[in-house]
Amino acid sequence: MNTTPLELESVWPHRWAVALVCATFPLIWVGGLVTTYDAGMAVPDWPDTYGYNLFLYPWQTWVYGPFGLFIEHGHRLLGSLSGMLTIAFLISAWWCQRRGLVRWLAVVALAAVICQGALGGMRVIEDKVQLAKIHGCVGPAFFAFAVALAVITSRRWQDADGVQNRAGLGKVERLAIVTTFLAYCQLVLGSQLRHLPAGSAPGDFRVALVFHLAIAAALVVHIFLLAFQVFRTQRDEWSLVRPTTGLVALVLVEVGLGAATWVTKYGWPSWMADYLWAADYVVHEGSRLQAWVTTAHVAMGSMILASSLLVALRSVRFAWRGSRAAGQGSWLMEAAR
Image (cartoon, rainbow, N blue to C red; front, side):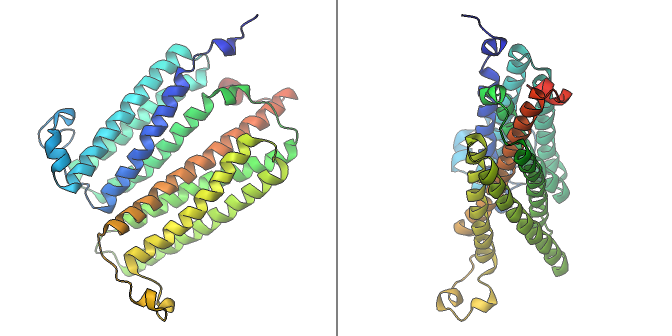
């Protein structure tokens, strides 16, 4: 039996990429909790923790100390784990992968995780909100990039064939790319909202909120258009149908979490005051419900971004496979194959 080069390629780069995804999503969650509880300065030094080496800080003080210290130090430990997994992915990619693009994407991943760690450290050293905003925007982008690495190194990516309805796939491809762009714009606007200074004018909050809601509406519309196109033209291609179905579910949950975030922070809208259950509701600033709903809203936004990118990558891959069969493949996809 003949063995193809594909069969000789190691599965370890994909395994490390999946591990990186699994470590980065909890990092997004804990980072969101740090912002929600305003615990960014719970540890005033960096890269040490109160003078201790990051990994040698007494665990009793960390676990049984103030909650702000617990999540901030935990955020640093999770960030270090993501960094080490990125290094492992880089080594496995250069050792095992024959595709040049994957190797250089691993280099980009290492540069990105170092940059993100440095941004987090500078946010502590300089204590500037602007750095916190940038840090909060780079994190979801890195998570989506880790998902892209897992997709590109998977056996499904390498074994992908072209689809029969190439005309319908082109529209799926365009919709998925625009949806990914809108998802990231929404995350950037959400970061601006979460990091507005306490003394900001009410008008600043209203402008940021209006833009956040407008992009959210556009994102919801695009996700449903994407789902409609996938189910209409690619219903037999489960590697597109499944993530698109998940994307629809995620955006519905996200809309509910967005509404719940508003209610837990500001109360029910005034036009609902006639309902007794709404009139009796009292906002408890800093409550556990408020913190976890708000953080879940942030984390779900990162999942939507990553899922949109996954659909976009797979649709591009299928389109390239079809074009390659017709002798029209691009050099970029040739490198990624």
